[in-house]
Length: 320
Length: 230
Image 1 (cartoon, rainbow over the protein chains, first blue to last red):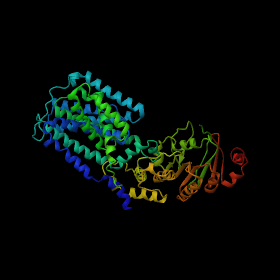
Image 2: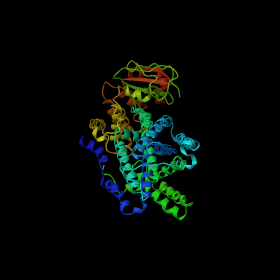
Image 3: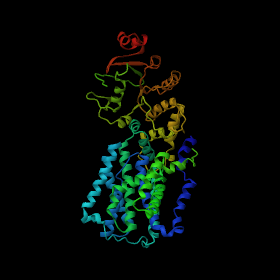
Image 4: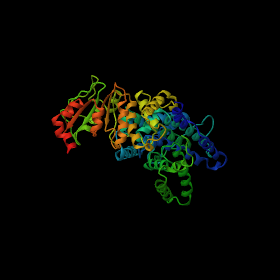
């Protein structure tokens, strides 16, 4: 039975490519020190995409309103820092809890639906929250954004204008959340999520409480999205209404599909490509850069159905 | 499709064949028993306990498992992953999101043993298995729930006749404590493997009894077996 166990332990083991990847994330400190602000934006977007991957890539729940949880996290961290407590780690915790509560509440509605109804439902809930934040301008600052967010120091380090602290902070949080996500997908619960994605009809027939699994996955994903939102608040010292926008929900979906859903690194790779492309193309022509993203998306979906990472994976097959 | 006026009792250890012409309501009856359809009226008991209002996955937990006429599997899970998942769900471990799968050695070993007993290659992805092996995996997934009653909806559907005998041999070798109800159209198979036969026609049970009695029954000959003579 040793071989049976190896079937699973092979997949859990860290591969050299992964170690190399994470070492590469340190390169911006030395190679592109003037782009550390961009690097921290990439890390935050990657974390947001990772959270979507848990529900879309693993459990198969499509969402067009995932910015809701990013926004709840961003505003929670912003309001905390503005009114009570500027220390960022406390902000992360508060944002995670607030987004988790929002996610758990919404999960009860969301898990009852599938396909088009599910997409419309998540879209609708996202729009609702966006407009609620817009009209509650006394609390959120409305369309002007939340001003006067004063973020304190992190272990004595100030958030400097070069983004050194910001990138280090975002990267560490991304890595820690990645470790948690990696653990989840290699657990029995992670296997159950893949089971739901692969065949939702079969799951009850093997005694699986699919809805309970999905509620849990949705809540975990919301927590991680909320943490990503808080990171944005802490690294930019402001919260704009855009954190809740439909555009953000759509972008993170595009990023995950580009990179490759259901493989943990897909969202990270997607975020790197998307954010670097936006930075480069929008410098040339700010109005036009979506053309290139659109073209890239069409090409990837047509020729690399498992995303860029899925295409690359053919060159690095696992031995199982 | 409808099923009505059904009164049926399945004692432990019996191998039932459920037969009847297309549209007789055989699969509908199976869906009612497993909770995938809700009955308008009537009651369902499992081992003396009423399960009529129980959700499908909770009926499985009580020991009522089924397979599907059309493969309802997990294409991108390996056979071992799929059966291990069923074992983990049964034992209440599937909610565990913190311990790595390799640490659930007992569940993995049990899944491997089930696959070995049915001669299914464990490491392959389900979608890469031969069709006959996928039909066996249907049964393996149900067995992993450790059922008391096993409902098999045309287990050999689409399997060539020479292979279906091997498939039914595997079914015949399952534990004698298990109650099995299978839907099947091949009368050779039915009379060889069933200890009792239920005949459904037009949503109702026409007759139930041991094979020799069913073979002699005039009404059955008329509405059902009669057709095979023609």
